Length: 421
Image 1 (cartoon, rainbow, N blue to C red):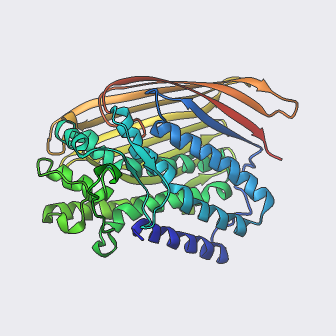
Image 2: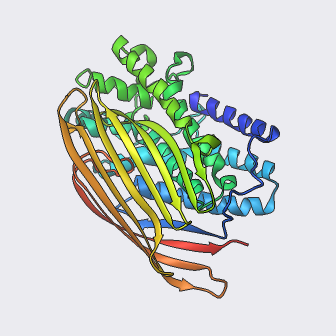
Image 3: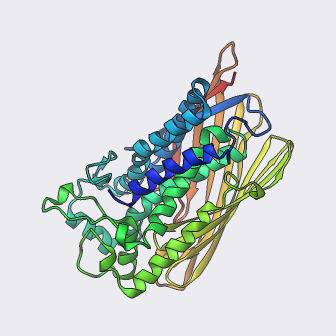
């Protein structure tokens, strides 16, 4: 059993303990009372093909929220939390492994996601030959590094989306607490758990390369290849394979990952203002990226239960140089009873060519527009909208966007709006 499964069992036990001590009151929803919920589903994203990271994350979280709401209608809070915890244990790899697989698909490399735990307690992506991975490393190192970290990137973004749903009162803390807690804990488990060599999974490469996991240990593999991209190729990197400089980088990611604990979902003081018509909350986060890592500081402002503003500051670092970024979103703004939009802008300075060693920077940015128009409404006021998303980004890394290159994308989906009884 590897580190992830160990941490997951600890997570289940901790959730039960928290309920027993009444540290979280899942029976009570935060004000204002939620009278309706919206569940969005992304039918087609860009690039066209198998599901993208954004598509998997959005669809998973909508199904999770919908089922959680139905669960708590029928069982007691403690029972519901236990069911959610064990469901997380079983189904967590679905989106994590899809994160890895989506990067390969965007590069035209076929792969197979195996999101169910095997006897060693490991889920993985396989079906890729060594020569394909070596060619990717030798010719496109940023994407090869991201291939390692994309699963954790997916976890990180799902945790952020779930946190945003709670803070903006799009859903209840009761429904989403386990998801936020679990995703943030999983991110910490990967990075901070890497500090402990004794619980590192001892993976052995099979002589049949098509059955091997694409990267092995996500964190060790990413760090090794950032520092030594020209060394002889092998997939599975263990603690003992790391140099002293690489182990210092393991320490860096291990301690910085603890920033993911700073969430208004966990700590009331991070809900700085919590009034009916004005809400201000703060959170922080951390994960790796194709050229190193980054830290986020998020600010959530909700005014008059109508204007939902999410801003963030972001600090990237490659080997030794810092680069700044940030973004601002107006989320689910209702222009008319039938028309809702979300507007997002990102700007960044990142290492030139996404290089791990350079001190030169390269400016970039992205914009995203999402339009939702209600096309159906029944007598009980439940409704469905058709969704159109447009996004453009320059060359650079943007979490959950599978392309590193310049890209213009179109996506189509639908949203189901349900009245809560």
